[in-house]
Image (tube, rainbow, N blue to C red; front, side, top):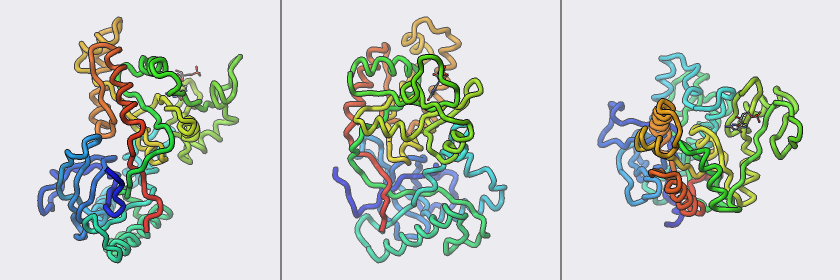
Length: 363
Ligand code: 5GP
């Protein structure tokens, strides 16, 4: 599998359910935000033909029709004219509580370039590209007003659609996000099982240093709350939150520092951080421990109360519903050891695998 320069691959920036789309000319293809789509034919202005790639199983792609970028934008804007569009876009992002804008960085990035069938049609794809670009550029900067077919006023916000991506080998060690039960166990057990391969990244906080704590080692102690709030709204953080009146957060820079040192950064973050890391060029390996049942959690975590296990199970189910398409590997087993073994295998297997990254200089 090599990078196919001339084919068009995109990352979806929104969820699409063909069952809720009335106008489909033929079989639609469902996808979720974050999915990679191979656009096979974009010659129609309303509908494109695409394959949805299954993570880790490229041969199992499903095929169908998806709405074109232009169609998505037009429909979204007309919807926003009907409802009050104040909060809609920001509510799509699942950013941390203090930074409602953090999750929208993907949407603000450059959007799609299309060539009709994966082959080259320079002229056509060039002009389409320019159109797409100029549209999203204005949108990002000042509120787009006018794709050629869009009659909305001057204040329509950016509509997240598709982003052109290509496969690339990373020169840095991918961060690892652990989700689901056993996350704490794995955070301790993985570095012991694979010595020298992992590092924790140093979080930021607004709280005062305690005796013996060293700035830059235990935390980056920030000078003021205002400064950290500014940095959070400038999207410099993977995730941030408040605890006991103080802000805590993991900065993209500290994750990048670990990744560039060649070690996998073990991250304790929520599923919403996956998109933010991807947008920042730090695509994570996402390992999810899927409990088979409440009973399974009781086996994996002896001593835990049954109601705690039940809550944990519910949380895991919800997590998978929301972010399942972004998981790199799903782990399951009856003992922590078994799951640790699977986690090691998954990391070894996916550490050097090419990833889909945004094409920066589309022409
Ligand atoms: P402390 O102020 O006692 O060092 O930390 C307070 C709490 O915040 C602890 O439960 C600690 O684990 C948590 N915490 C500190 N930094 C981070 C972070 O970057 N991410 C997450 N998820 N929790 C953090």
